[in-house]
Amino acid sequence: METSKFDIADYLDSKEMIAEYLNTVLEEGDNADVIVAIGHIAKAIGMTKISEETGLSRPSLYKALSDGAKPQFATIMKVLKAIGGQIQVNPISA
Image (cartoon, rainbow, N blue to C red; front, top):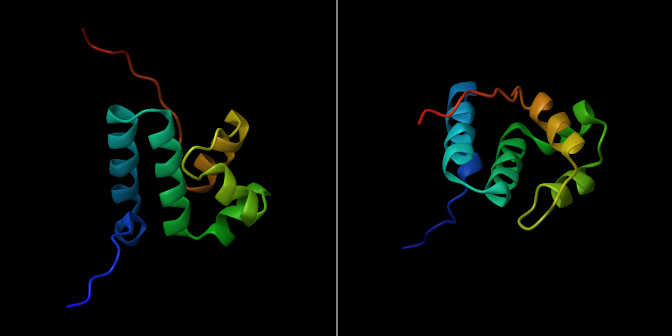
């Protein structure tokens, strides 16, 4: 029996699924997890499309959104806008 490697990007096929995934990572993960999650979403949408919308090259995107990367905040904001997301701050309940 042959198995294939699990790739979360294969399941990020709707805006609702993307939002739920990213919100879960934002709530439960750390900085590195969020960057990798944004990379998964960009891959699901298509790096070429994200590259065109952000003005960043595909190699730069792959590098900025890879595990262990420390992209600039401006890069994250450009990619979030391109994937149809936004940052919203809510008060933390005690």
